[in-house]
Length: 553
Image (tube, rainbow, N blue to C red; front, side, top):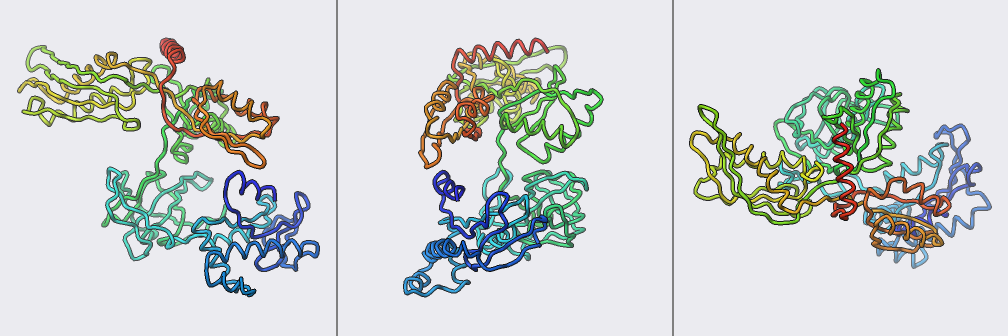
């Protein structure tokens, strides 16, 4: 009952209570289905199939009738005819009530709420039955839009119809004792064993080997699956999370899954040097399973760098290395993914000229470098007229600037949100080439960025904190000390929700501090929000430490 109150008051959702528990904690034996007025009672074997359907316990009859009446009252609000019947003192039939519950669930007017014990396998069947009865099936939701290579919608849709061309999305990769499993949702058409499908991301076809339907750790072999099904395919080598699989004769791409860039990194090394290869294989499997998790090797030091979405994210990965793959690692201090940008519009020119016998190299560009809109990355616009910089060299100029973005001028952090406008230039009929203009663009970047007000920017996290009311002052004061910006404060019956934007660099070790402040009752979550300029004093420290660390490599 406490959890239902939290759903209503903390999450601001509208729970529709469908069952009542029989007993609590160690004495929990089953549930009462309010609609059917039947008690589902399990034994303690842990076998979910060993249950009895009994009458409602005598001491629960009154509660069952009270909650059942509230359930039906909320459900029939979805249908005028059912409401009129109920107001006339007649209870609608079971099919009508279930239709009302389904309608309200799909409209998000309320949320059917069940209880049970996953550990003891009690109450599982009613939840699964409710998934079938009340949640939308594939034909109840809008069809998935198809997109072009740039990610723009084409106006076509993957219609839920087995007779249409195949459109499927790989949404999860999992490695188990039988090998790699690729979980696929089929939006349109059929997926058949032994046929070939096109991966629109790689442009390559792959043959479908074994298709299985998953039931926890059990598998049912299938010869085919169709629109609306979720299945797993074994042995796919080049498919990753978010890739579209389609009919090679009728290709199309589904809207891709978006994964944010990592905001924190740590260096790791195996405690046993002989385990390096084992660690590499394990990390490779983890990357396939989690696209928001990245790895790279530091070119100077040779260190393995793990990148993720937060301190907890990387802690979990380290634990998986140890627990699942048996690799003990030494972990370095977490590093924040700072970035660099510019603050001034700067007009400049650069000429690359090299003569060393025979044909030389020549490329001249006139350009304006300006701060871009947040989140736009790098944009190149050309306003060159008259052929002073032939169109065939524009991609080389873009490549030169783009490749330079990885190393900013302040501390070598990647540069974000830059717009370069090519205004004029010059070329030589013999000595000019794509390479010459690419070199000119690289040198232009190093020449002009220091003049354009370079600035260090830091990742800001959207933080949600839940704390008892008597600790609100301490929590807000602590967030302020962490340079946080309080966005909202919402009071609930059991806790206060505080929303804030806080720099990631200030959030290391926060969970321990929060537990101390709130006597163990506080909790929080956070996710990346945006980048903001670093305060000057902090930027100076970060730049100095980064430069010293780079020198020591």
